[in-house]
Amino acid sequence: TTNLTKFFRENHHFEFLEKYLRNQVCERILKGQQKTIRIWSAGCSSGEEPYSIAMVLDQVLKEKKLSHIDAKILATDLDTNMLATGRNGDYKANSLESIERVYLSYFEETATPDILHVSTNLRKYISFKELNLIQDWPVKGPFDAIFCRNVMIYFDNTTKAKITNKFASLLKPGSHLFIGHSETILDSKDRYELLGRTIYRRN
Image (tube, rainbow, N blue to C red; front, side, top):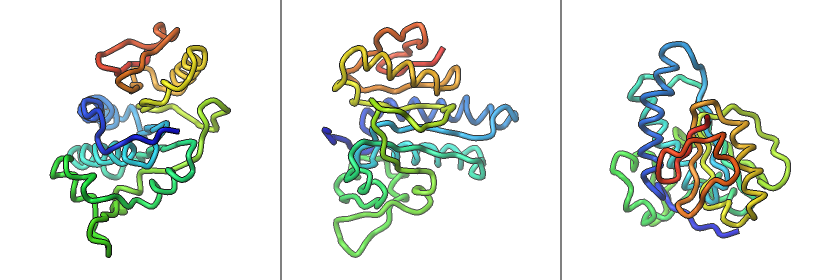
């Protein structure tokens, strides 16, 4: 696997996620139409993506005074070494230099000067699990969002179509699939609407 990742990579996805959570998901919760929040980071690598999602989620829930809500992020990957890094939650301080100041509060200093540790408050949202996308998925939906970015570029077109259709079956109607900047959805366009720049809405 190619484990290239960073915090808030392709930041427009996280900007969109923040607005979606605040204006749609949280509003449904406040109206009693929804009780939980579920997000899947499929191909999470060493954890920067799900932790970025968790930071956005936690900020929105605090803003909406919904911190008590049952909100969970499933983070899966094929590489067990990368999953171990994510579970451990230790990252080099220079990997956080470009993130917004508000998010730095989610990291704690460690005994090693150039290493920061993800706070317990953020880690509570995430479950790291091993999963191979081309095998069976022991995953239950429905999800409010699925991130599968820069993973499907390694699959043939038949496999890509199969995976995106399986994602559609696990997404709530009106929820979103985020894919990588060089990826497209094939043979599944009747199930998704393109919203722009690799963001798709489940029909």
